[in-house]
Image 1: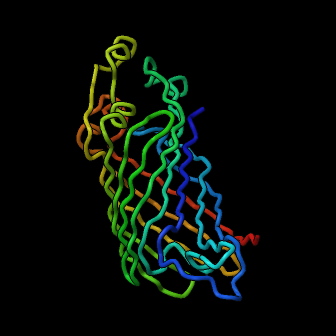
Image 2: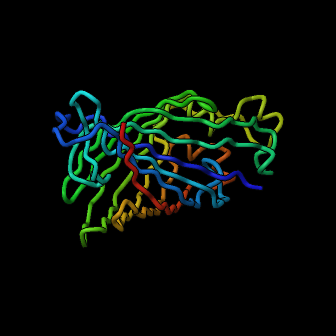
Length: 258
């Protein structure tokens, strides 16, 4: 069975104009959770793809006892504004036993990447940059940036489209694209030691729809092309330099008072 790919994005509003809480505001938290499916490569550089679960989480508003709050109860990810957001990504494990072409390579454990990002959104555009550190399968640093054109055909629908760039340090690159001398002896691959650098370039088309009453729908399709050492890796050469993915997520907003 192919490994299911799980990608979860966390967007926590940290700075967006912290405001004193008005008298009628009650302490509490407003957040959105989502669950859906994603069709994506089984691992970095893979030519095989599979369908697996994916999800989303966003914190729109936090009001603390004592008169301090950030965010807005009705905030959406594409509302105009700027500030910092938390970011995380889950990179699933890579098991040689699940793919014949990986025989002889060491298994890579599940990784949780944690970090921060900056965003700037206007009525017609969105720019962002994020940086994260891995914990688990890799302990390196990764960064991504992108810019989108935004189209708002009606009140509930938002369409986005724009380029993406992804960077990884030497530890990240060697974990997923490298082949150690020991692995070279046990596999079909030659030894390969990649360096830090640009990992991929691509484009993503997205859509979000707000049904009202806390319900929403998010979808996206993307294409990336591996670059530099990531594209020269023997793992990628037996796989595919072009990577495609698509996801669809149903979201629901909740408010918890305290």
